[in-house]
Length: 214
Image (cartoon, rainbow, N blue to C red):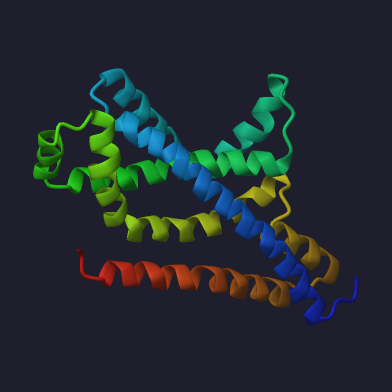
């Protein structure tokens, strides 16, 4: 058993938490890009695009995240593509986040009054301009609270990536615990760190929900 003081354990966990935060941001931003593409396909007039987007969302929402990470990490090498744990974690969480964000935003688009679409059409804007200048800005603003709420879930989901070897907070905690045999101290600190990351986001989401719409 290695001797680690509580301060040393905390410092190492905080250093590892940087990777948790970084992975969360990469997945949220990347998922936003993917989710926007899926959303546009989901509301397109072409049926094959809508079906493809629906299938994508169904695949990632109805299968475990761990399985998705396994498919990326172990599946790509089978076709000759070597991939590092950090890249597999980033890609897996990006595709996962994209499916959920697309559905969150679609709810906002469908909640808009039909008059918004008609007003945009009356301005003789192109389909892309109607979507980009009129519809999406309102839908994104309307769905900001659930999007922030999903970000909280994404922070916690990063813990799953420890299974494929990505050295985020949970994997580092496991390694420290194996060296110190102090699970209460180690995982207690991990819980506090996750709480410190998630609580401000949760509070912000609640404030957004309580704020009067404009």
